[in-house]
Image (tube, rainbow, N blue to C red; front, side):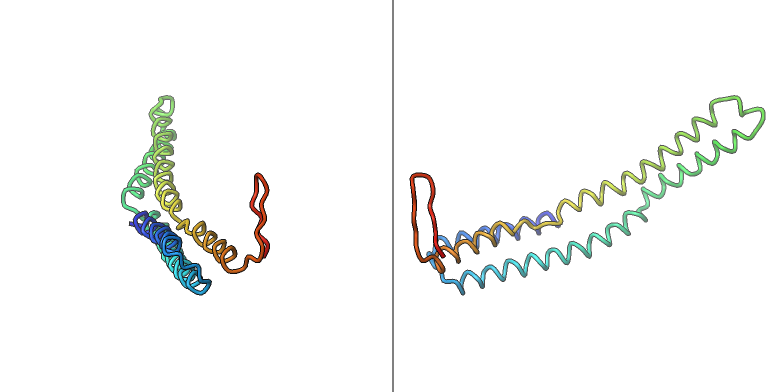
Length: 159
């Protein structure tokens, strides 16, 4: 759901920027109001993301599937070490197989936990700063520019 939340915030920010441009209302107070709203919504997103991230980390460490794999891995590894201590069976490869398989299962459970948290972490930034910066540029250009100069390649604004 967070990817849709982030997408909605991004689309709202883009629509707000387009609305300023299409309406031609470059009044500083007007743009500042829209900018404050986007910044506020982005902070709310970030706060909710942080809370959710902490809960996800806790939940992933106690997930049933992950703990089952970890438990089977510990049992297999322990059983393999126990077989290694039995004189008749210590010369076989069963103990090594069980120990290695148990260790691999434990590692797999840790990887599953890490993958979930990493995948969610990619959504941490709502990516609305590009729109806020463009609004700052609009404020500067339309409300604080005193002189405009240009050459064959550049446009110069004096504030």
